[in-house]
Length: 205
Image 1 (spheres, rainbow, N blue to C red):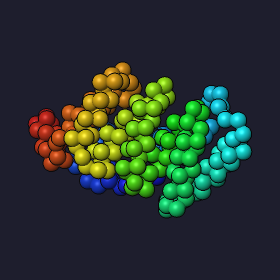
Image 2 (cartoon, rainbow, N blue to C red; image 1 turned 90 degrees about the horizontal axis):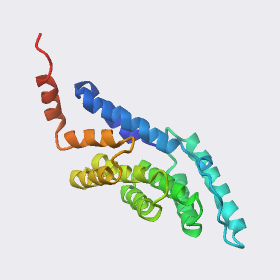
Image 3 (cartoon, rainbow, N blue to C red; image 1 turned 135 degrees about the horizontal axis):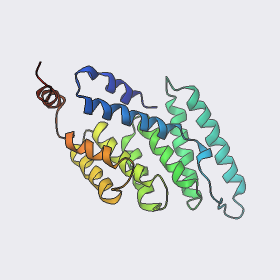
């Protein structure tokens, strides 16, 4: 679901300094981890309102079927199925907001939305996760993905920096914190500037 990231990462890669290349590959792998998750990752006690068991189970069944459809179309994303998966995930998170699966549903909806280029919707869902589910284990990743999307998809560097800095302020010990600090050292520099710095720091023969 991240063809755009993959193609951009390959363009001119040999001309990009090692630090930048490591950043591209590292976050490419992280995004693969984000999109690889499935309903099985969520544990915890289900909180099904009385009389809503049929709707609950039907939504899960429909979501699983849409997941399977998208997995089969990785090289040519079925946008209709993707939008339906987003809608079903939103419906679950809205109807069963206190269920342990709810933030996961929103995270996956955001991830799929970004994958098909609906970036504002993706950011909206990550913001909801961050603000509404303070105990969700992937909450820091939601803030990171907001920053990442602003930087790489929407090209809004100021908002990207604000969100990267918010990530560091609130999650300074997170496993991704050092990588975020690394991003902030180069985010304002053009590829040409990075290449010049790289060449300047090379030992003379």
